[in-house]
Length: 561
Ligand code: FBP
Image (spheres, rainbow, N blue to C red):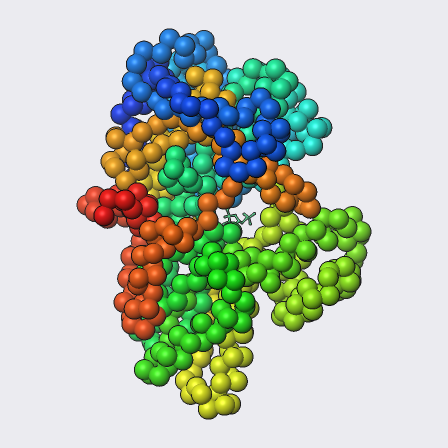
């Protein structure tokens, strides 16, 4: 096919024509959907503290949508604003498309604006009014480039005041915040602020993050996880095949996912490499860096004994934060960096900063920091993100581990305990997966989440996260509703202070996905039972176009096998 437009691929042109399947319950539009409210809820932990902070929005009931006339749904035209917050995830544009279509179906006079560049767009009052023509170019596409994203956190009294001024002046009735755990925490704070200040603003969240860690019994997965893991799995599968063809290298692949190891586990299922490290297990077993290295070296040696000086190892990017000694170091570093922020910012060289930090850390942690390769020590000191997180995507854990494994094997060689060859190649796959063209699953899921957010907003259900469930069933059968944001909160230490945050869902070591992995890992270690999943398929038999993640399959069918 000839390119009608030099900047759009043939696939993208075809993809624009894809019509997401809307859950049956949403098909008749907001006026025919009633919200059934359940019992009052409480936060997952630290109830008293969370309640104190969310005085007006704590304890809201769960909302489930059911068919039925709903005269209460807003008939008068409303103006809704959407903001994309945090890291990109495939399907963001379809959230906007679903939201837009849901609003227009309810009343063609409803309008949607998109704040530009993430939450900072609200503060700087930068937005665009979304029209059908504009949006049609972005349906079923990856990326957040339609309105861009950002990590600004609205937290100071001045910022709340500015946000209020701009939202009120723009006559915004509802704000839809598309984000991960931190961004949706921010959405909850804005919902609370609006109630406290008596502003007629409904705030609705949408669960986004490739990391897959924004989930619970009502949010079965966050959007983007499906597509991102398929993209990483294609790349890892290709590496497995290369490894098995040349049989001369070990490949160490670090995969994104910030803290939780869901991405690594899922890519492990999809490709069956020789080593898959899971951060949560490291924490549970209180493994030191040396023990992790011993474990890797053990597999390398055993394979070498069979003449196999090759293999593939997956390393979650958050691993470093789970190693107890590193966790202690990072937490102490967070405090030193937060407490002395302006002093450190004024220093000119990394060396000066390091010396300062070494002096201000407890002695044993200063010694640990000094024992790390210089590059890693510097990476640990990089600025935290606006939510207080260490930027693990910038810490080259795969290099740290390969260096240490290399050293260990050299020592064993000198002692005559190892005679293989260890030649390692390192990779980091993160940004490659965040803006891919959404899989059918993510295209349908994000469209439904956006449409559902419109229904929540039209029912004035503020402080809720858009919830679409039963995801292993066909999209038509998905169940829809809203989950109170405060229900997912606990208190954590960020930037040296206690803050309410949505609790991250880490890999559950008692859950079926992890147990399935444990059953198989020894076999994967010694054999070449690699799977080569290939690229995402958008056209063809449903068995390849519509499959959901293994994680979701295991979790949702957990009790049923
Ligand atoms: P969100 O939690 O905002 O969805 O971001 C996820 C993520 O992709 C992590 O996997 C990664 O560690 C981080 O963003 C990288 O952040 P940045 O885009 O700021 O480099």
